Structure formats: structure tokens, C-alpha cells
Length: 487
Image (cartoon, rainbow, N blue to C red; front, side, top):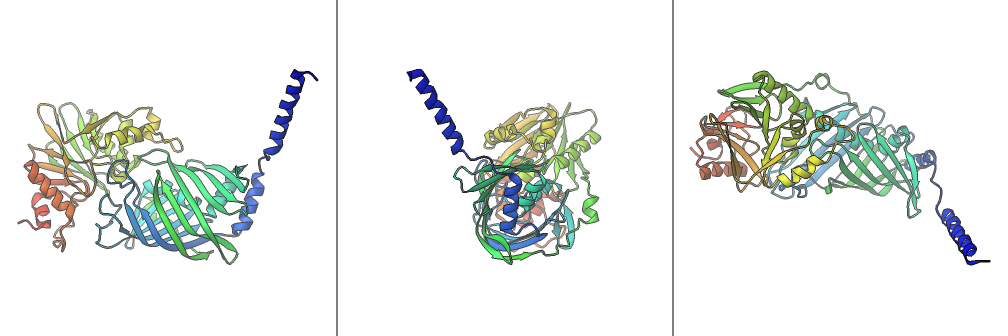
């Protein structure tokens, strides 16, 4: 046999052996049936589980790009109603580190717990504020993701979305991959017994664009024929958000979740209050904005929450001042509730003004698209233009001056901006001070953020008569001074 023919035969044999060594792709339907049987998912209509552990406050990092602030959960409970496409989550959360922001009413370090009840059904999300439902449209995608990436929900989602199957590289199980249209993508890793061990998913986020989530389930236990993990761990955007030990599981619980009429009827509305010539406080929701009229354009302070809220704010700006474009949008800080509309601002053609500390992070975040559910920025085809403020920046048209200052020494966030209108003696700020209802009693303990704001006003020698907060009502400076014990 000549050398050429021998080499050809050896190569062919090697190829054949390699093909034999690679197992064929498993049948997806068979993999799903195995998982349904192993986990007791086929007849499971709903499941509730609760426990306690640690985690983090997502989207509220102290410094841009830093890990989310750590938190402790004395209660973490979910009720997943698969037949009703609904979920309820109840939590009691306290801080585990002093720096960073907090969602909702998260208290400062050492000042107790924040309790929350959060729900979703189909295309509607809402929170309970006492007995009253409060619509939270920006949370629909996250909560639907959490419902359908639960251990049993993900098997049901894989089945209805015609998942494809592949063998695990280690041969110890299989993988299922699918897309829940407009919601998320997922790859599910199952062990040899058919139990869900890990989910690598991706969902749209109003700030970061398509965002990676890794969820692991371990230490499965039997609950009347239904297997459920005793430990749930999850990271989002590269940082841990959950590590929960489960101590109670109930199956086929009647959830009673039904979207309230008020939530179904919700539409973003903007209530405008003129506070000076050419200056409006734009309220009407949990987060405010401020519109400032310049000679040939407009400046908007804050584009919060998500596309829907900021789109309503831009519409109100056009109504108040027809014919003048919003040229700059000033972002007070990078926390997600205060920045979720920046992609909308880019779509509207505005330049973003943020802190120098946050600019590199924003350049990267805004370059990451939302492909799973394209937002207004993706639809516009525009790219973000970001200006970073280090210390101070003046915006002037020769008639009006707007000064952006960095707040020094805050425990809430690094790269914290406030806006001063010297001629009008107005100060615009977020989270450093949120006024309480009129005639509220003076707090028993002075808030460190309030003290920090007063210190910065004094340091910069700002002339201020009224505060235009980005949460709450317009108040005289004297209310802040009362809150910190200054008479």
C-alpha cells in the first residue's frame, strides 16, 4: 500500500471514530418528558416556596460598574401560578452594607426592613401599597422571566416554545434552549436524572439592554412527588442577586391573582407645575423630571424608569413648549430607576449629561442593544452621545444659566449630580432629600443623605429658596433645614 493511500485510510478512520464518539443530539420532546417526570411538573398547576438568605439590590450600585449593594432577606417568598400566567413575590429586606441605593422604601443601614409585595399577570405588573395596587409597567419583563425560569416553569416554557436539545459536554445530562418571544432566551442544563440544575438566560433591561442572568438550583428534595431545590442562587448583570435557602414548599396552591382594574387602566400621566418662567416640575408618578426652557432649546433633568414614562415626559415637553427640541437630558445618577428612560432620550436626539465617574459605564451600557424586545433607541437607530461632568458644568444661552454640580461625600451614590438655577434660586435633586407629606412630624433620627445635601449646599454657597425634588413635592429650603434640625 503506497504512503498516500495509507494516510488517506487513516484519516478516514479517524473521522469515522470521531463521529462515533459524538453522541447524536437528544430528542427534545424526550428530554422534556424526562424532566416533567423527574420533577413532577406535568400535573403541577402552581407552587409556592419561601425561605431566607442573602442577595443584593439590583441596579443600585454605589459606583458605576460596582457590584449591587448587598442585602439580607428575612423573608423571600414566591407563588408561581403557571395556569394563570401569574406570580406573587413577598420580601422583607434589610441592608448588609451602608453604601448604594435602594429600591422603594429600603431603609438606611441599621434602620429596619423594607417589606414589599410584587405581582405580575400576563402583560401587567403591580405592587401593593397597603391595600392599593400601584402599576409598575417597567417590571413586567423581569417578573415574567422569574415566573418562567422557576424550576418547573422553565420546563413548561421549554415545551410550549419548542425547545431544541443538545447533550451536555460531560455526558451527564442534556440541555434545552428556547426563546420566549419578546421576553427572554434561555438555555436549561439538566442532570442525568432530569432535574434542572442551571439556567443561562437573557432578558431586556431598560438601562443595560439585553442582560445575562445565571440561576442555579441545587439540593433537590421531594414534596409529595414534586422535586424542588432547597437552594436557589442567581446573578444578574454579572453580580449575585439571590442566595436563598428554601424551608417551605406547597404545591397546587390557589393563588387568586387577578390583575386589578386600576392596573389594567393605567396610563402614564404627567402633571406639570410651573415654578418659574420657563421652568416646570413634571410629576404625576413616582419619579419626577424638570423641564427648563432655554433661548432655542430645552433642557430636561431626569429621564426615569422606562420608555413609557420618559416618552410621556417628552410629549409633555412638546406640549408645554412647542417647536423647541430637548437638546440635553441631565441624569442625576446611574441608579436604574432614575436612568431607565435614557435610551428614550437618545431616541429623541438628546445629548446625555451625566457624571464623569459614570460616563465610561454609560458608554458601554448604551452600546449594548435590546434585541429581545427592541426599545425606542433600538428602533430609532441612533447612538448615544454622553458628556461627563467632573465637579461642575455651566449650561448657558446668554439669558439663562443652568449649573450642574456634583454632590460630594454621599453614601447613596458616587457621581451624584444636582442642578442649580442661580437666578431663580431653585435646586433640583434626587434621593438626597425626598420631602414627606405636608405637616409631617420631624424624623426622630436625622437622615444622613439629608445632612449631606445641606453640607453640599453650604460648601458651594448656593442661593436656594425652593427645592424641586425628583421624588415628591416642591418645597421651600426651610423644610430640608427642619428635617436636619436646623432652625
